[in-house]
Length: 370
Ligand SMILES: Cc1cc2nc3c(=O)[nH]c(=O)nc-3n(C[C@H](O)[C@H](O)[C@H](O)COP(=O)(O)OP(=O)(O)OC[C@H]3O[C@@H](n4cnc5c(N)ncnc54)[C@H](O)[C@@H]3O)c2cc1C
Image 1 (cartoon, rainbow, N blue to C red):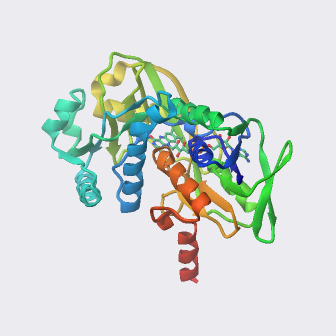
Image 2 (image 1 turned 135 degrees about the vertical axis):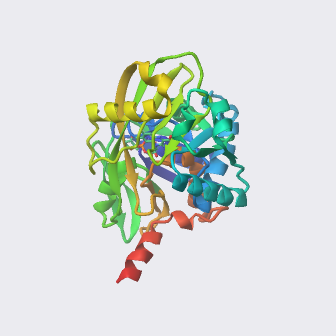
């Protein structure tokens, strides 16, 4: 029986680990803290199809198909709600970009509607339409509860014989003759036929120790939750170019952020500045929400690759695979990525071309520039 180690107990690691175990690979997942302690447990759970590039749109489209059936497969309610995503354009330039994106999306069978101000008012009556030019809506998109999705995978992974080792930090990858043989942790050394590094924003630190340099920026993203309110926001809302986003959870809290640029680094402190910026942006678009009380705020990390798309696939080291540089999209992509990694590892190839996500795409550019 072949064996694998997956490093990282976020949604990417668990989706890959579950799919490997499903294919009969003896799989151990190593997590330096506890499952969901990274970006997964801090994200807003948006599942979005409205991207600009074909390969990302296709991957999101396939992930949505997985999510639609996953509660039944895992026998666990992952709380996936397809209320749609609405993107509001605050200026003409953003509207033109959105319209262009809908054409690319249509080319790969993703149907996104273009909305005028009146149509938006009917869906979001609390929005001040004088502040927006128009928008787009994709009804297949939605929100999935991050903890439910992760725990669903974890439960089925364990039922399939998978092992989850908490508070076990991967410290070194054991490479011999350009092949990975195992992982040294703060506790033991584990041998395995295959190793997947899915340690979120910390993957690059581990990979650096074996000479793989990921060119990416790690940035803090802050987010907050309000007091619970009677349900009134069906789709998740994103505004461009302000990057304000918000949705309402099943408990009624409004969860939102503003994706403000922050300094590079691993700092996770909440700031008063974020509360001010978010409130200002929200009040501008949705004036009736100005009196809603904020209950708590927190922050998570997002790691952006140079083209703001994740890195998925093989490395130059035999049997070593990576899934990192989430670029703020890996929660959406994880359900299908798990299936692709399991195919790649057990069959040596995937039923779909993953090269647009490969690490090699950056190496080529670096070589071309020299
Ligand atoms: C505020 C916010 C909102 C977001 N909203 C969305 C959204 O709406 N939609 C979307 O698609 N994405 C969203 N994202 C991005 C999304 O959260 C991430 O892309 C996704 O959760 C990444 O999952 P992951 O499993 O790759 O990484 P993580 O969830 O970070 O998991 C990595 C795990 O590896 C562990 N680890 C690290 N180093 C080691 C080591 N050496 N040994 C063992 N374990 C280790 C960590 O403790 C962590 O648990 C958002 C992110 C933030 C911060």
